[in-house]
Image (cartoon, rainbow, N blue to C red; front, side):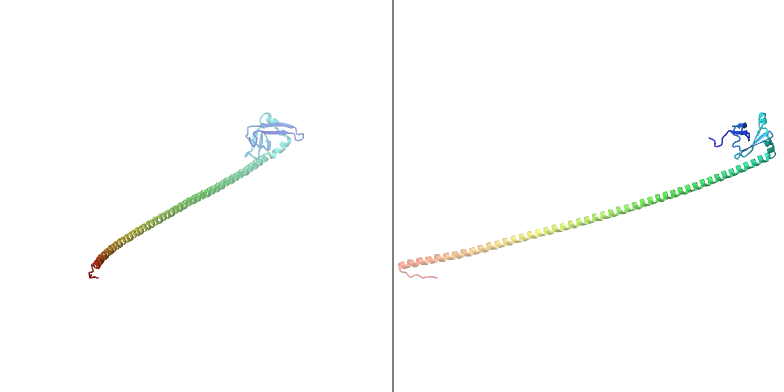
Length: 256
């Protein structure tokens, strides 16, 4: 919908009674928002605050008679040209002012747009910079985290290696201790066995000695017994001889 209407109506009425005398209408949109009308001769001049020109309508036929000049119009005729000129100048001035205003508004709008674009560009640059800084910070954090994880992994590997070495060292020490204990145990067993063998040998030697001593003693005892037997036999023989001599009255020589 247009802000300014396309249809224009010019009404002539009786100023005393208010009766409408004539009406002129146009709807071609050439002239809009008419504020002043002046009839000069066969022409009607149309003034407007929004048009950069003064409209002129030639009155022909009945229009000429209908919009004939009244006494007041005739009285107004002398300065109608000046009024039309002044109206045209005022219209041009208003149009120039409006154009200047529109130009200023356009410049302000353009300046505002440029400022907004500059602000938006600055914000975008700021956001881009913030994004880059955030990205860089994220990358640094990621690199730092990776370094920390690598350091941690290295420390864990080092600790694991140290633990394995300690474990291996402990196992070696335990194996060494076990070997030493086994060696000591073996030596103890060998010493025990040697002692037992020595004791057995000594016991055997003692038994042998005892047996030899017993045999010797037995031999001596046998000799002693033999000697005693011999002496007993001898004594018995002497006794028999004595008894026998007594019986026969013979002297017996005693041998002690």
